[in-house]
Image (tube, rainbow, N blue to C red; front, side, top):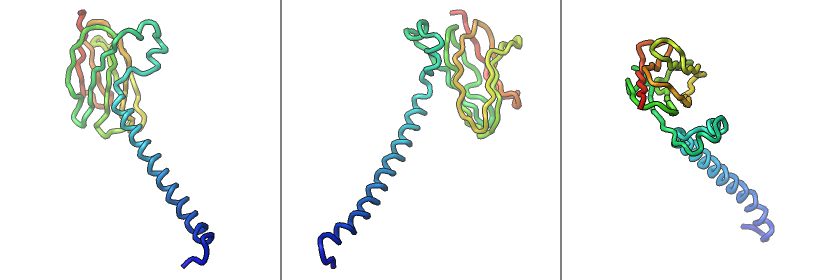
Length: 154
């Protein structure tokens, strides 16, 4: 079929190059998928910005995470109780709604945190240090969606 080894070489070279490119593309795509999956799994980790803000105070302190999920019918769980101290409020938007505004406020009306979500942004991770009392997490366009947050003195 091929008259010389040289002709066979020049025909297999482009085929090998294309095969190598396809394999590399598959490896890059699978690595990107794995990386995004790992970052989703590690999403409850304390953000690096928290350590740069309070380097001496937070490096030896364990930060707890309070996970809350927004579904189409409201927040789950509907209430949380915890002792005072720094914590991450991990709010995940699974409602499939866009442009939401989350607010954490003390029952007397003082806003402690607020986040205007852009488009279908799914996560909000504020680092909070609330004093003892009663707070509420709401979404401003759906005031019936509420998560009561009780912070105890101990």
